[in-house]
Amino acid sequence: MKDLLKKSSAYWVKYDKYEWKHDYLMPAKNAIPSLYNPFKSMENIVVDALNIGRLCMKRDINNQILKAKIQKFACKYGLLGLMTALPTTVNFIDYDTVYIPKNRFINRETIKTDDYLKFFFPFSTPDRVLKIENDKTLMAIIMTLSDNLLAVNMSFMRDYGERSDWLKTQFSDLAFMFATSNLYYEDFKYLSPDEKELYRQSMITCDLLTPTYHIELLDKPTLVWDFHSLLLVMQMMFCFMLTDENSGLKLCRKCTKAFMSENKGDLYCRGCRNEK
Ligand SMILES: [Zn+2]
Image 1 (cartoon, rainbow, N blue to C red):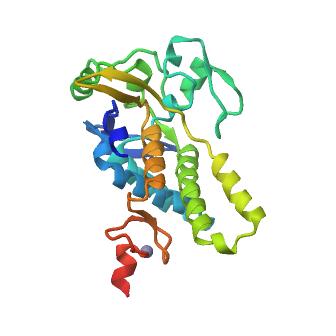
Image 2: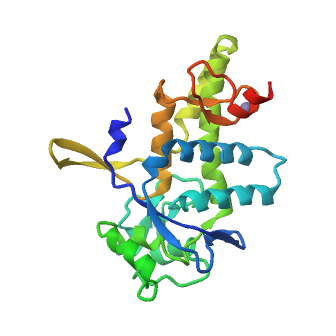
């Protein structure tokens, strides 16, 4: 199953430090960017995202603790790339209007491109060109990513940021799907037909991004996914892991954290097993 994901253009940029500016998470001053392949950290990304989502779903969680966790996630994996994840096309930058399919954040189908960009460049005016002449590390990275589209590269700029409420929604949506799926099978015997239907419907209505793909004629015909955001990579990896019986992704029966099991019969995460 993992072979389906193996071939992909999923290189992503992360900075070593991020900070909250008002309610936006952005690269910190003088932070150093680097390039990495999310597929090499697939299990860690999904487990970390699910456990942040689990906290986001708690009503009594301290907002500062939550923001610190999201900040730590970004330092490990970068921002989610929401700007390129939401529109119908990643080429939106070439047009005056951005088309956005059903989503949780922007309550209309179309929005002027300049207004859309303001959601992600709250403290600057984006010029739709990359201003990286004086930023040698970033310039070197962008050159390596020569296939990348302008909008994707713009989301790696130092003045690009993502809103805390939007980030929290993405993390909690993922955790909601994970919890729903686990509860459904765990409680299956005790659920009424109506309850079962409710569980099934709530999974179907979860917003998932639609990836695009193409075929490359390498040593054999090869399916290549086009990823333009870490969010899409994360959602895909999660869906593959959730539906693959051998992936080892589990929910701890005691503390309800997500974890990767070492043995098939493991019901508890390592922390809870050590406590016993
Ligand atoms: Zn546990």
